[in-house]
View 1 (cartoon, helix red, strand yellow):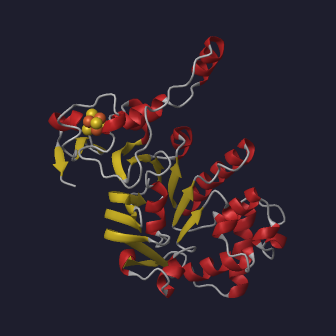
View 2: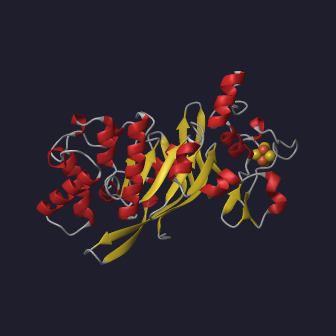
View 3: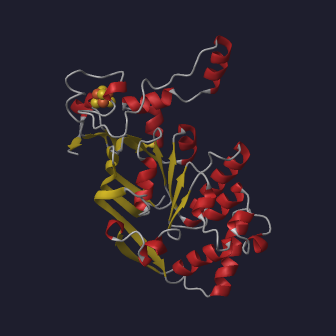
Length: 348
Ligand code: SF4
């Protein structure tokens, strides 16, 4: 499997300045996105997953602002079928509406939302939007680009691809728009992409994403609160809480050896089939995470999870912010419980 890095996010801080106070939506995030791999970003609503993705695309809504940090995109330009060059682009230095940023957005870094209509331009045909992406990546003329667009739509299992190429996004169903959208970027950001779909369409979309990933070596950043989908889709997982990555490792380790009390609580809240059967008999409820996510304006001293943590240590967790600790190679956690097991600790 490829280890080619396509994007690096370093020490990203994205804040919202509101009359009520400052919301630190993303508060020091580091992530690496690799070709041919899926990075799952997990957490409850408001933990900063979507704002991290929107920052990567320079689409942070007002009054939000990237306050600090770097986002580097290693762009590949295909000159012929076999030759390519690469270009290092500092995304945080580009203006959100610049020509360069608009060219990257939607072509090389695309985003599929819960409501895919929002991600496609309603006034241009599906084909025109895919052809633009192809012509930016590959040295082909309009006729060849159109043929490739039809081919991509057919591979995405859209019936009558030669007709769909000339339709407008509003003429397609939700599932069809999802398929048309996942066409061929370097990095596909999928933000809860299947929440509004039925289970059969969901399974088809997940299959399609995997197929396109295999074929085009596409990187996927998959944002969800659903750990079940993460188990199916991702190789790497980052768990976010209140704007920070609190644990990150490979997908097998997150399920086999979750370290952060928040990750452990998220895992306990997933229904297992035998559990569901037992609970149905005994009328038991599924375990939920104690308490609520604190209000977004608050800056808690110490660990931001401490008011909800079952392993809270008075005088430590509520006073000292935990550093990032690499407990074993490739497995990092922000929690005082592992201070003595640290191979490396990093200040925030
Ligand atoms: Fe819980 Fe303390 Fe670890 Fe935070 S640092 S997750 S409060 S044990």
